[in-house]
Image 1 (cartoon, helix red, strand yellow):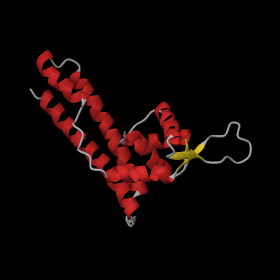
Image 2 (tube, rainbow, N blue to C red):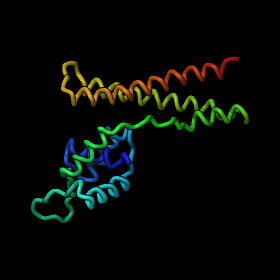
Image 3 (cartoon, one colour):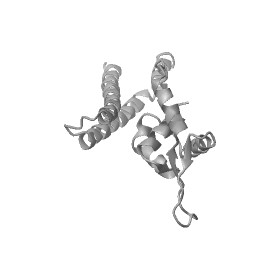
Image 4 (tube, rainbow, N blue to C red):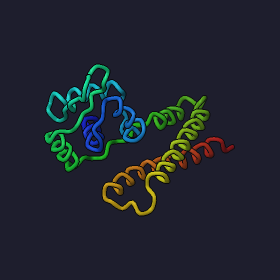
Length: 177
């Protein structure tokens, strides 16, 4: 249910084509809610049929031009309704944790190398988030919208910090004699 809400959010921030949405998902929303190009286009079609969005009128010749979408009042109302609705946290489902549990009964062959790989990935993601924070959230950006975007980024930083520290401790524990 959240993909349409992610798309509505992105379109309210800036009317965009499907391709532009895909690029924006790759650079921002996709850090915490990923979607493929096909999923985004499918959802755009559904949202348009439901009257939540519309394609903007095109200027001049239309052949080869990308369709840009904007959110209609019904889409804004749905996003506001969804934002105000309480939701419970989702249970954690992590393949790495399940694989570690399985390794306790079948052995640890290959798991340490993958722990190191995961650590590298989380360190890289943490560095990327910290760079975004330095670039996009200088001191003094105090508008509510900026603070909300920043707390979402901070959640990513905190999660990557957690995973990095947890992986370092786990590797240390498994490599101890």
